[in-house]
Image (cartoon, rainbow, N blue to C red):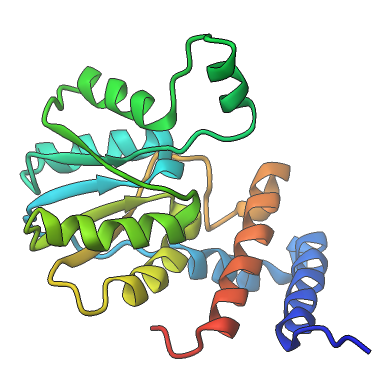
Length: 216
């Protein structure tokens, strides 16, 4: 008889607990706030070689990167290429205009006055793909320090991913959570979209902890 992986029970428990908690915010607000804060990490930024923004930080990441440039953190910004999938491939097959996330972020950065923008090649989607792409790219371009702007709701999880993927590589990475998205760790459960994002990201963070307990 097939056995479920042990982590599946833990994941199910987290999902059910998050759903119960979200259903009674008036009773459990301190716990909900603590859960929201657990998702978000924003480390102090100091001058770096380059600012990198994740694909899922979208326009909020571009805005935050522009703020960092104005503060003198770095003059260059990098974006990850966005491998096409699903409907994107169909647009390309039909020869129709298609603007991927990288192109959109570059256009937004240019509009914000940031013209020194480079692309980081990426073969797979998700935060894991970005971490695995960032490590060799930073080696190839002799990058010593990076400020990475991430979507606030999974900045903590991305920190854990980077701790694993950047091990043995020279670049020092500082993670900053963008400040312009709609996710509010102090009251995420009060809206349907916030609750959906919060529960999904708590599940993913819990799974990462179970699969990689030695990551810090």
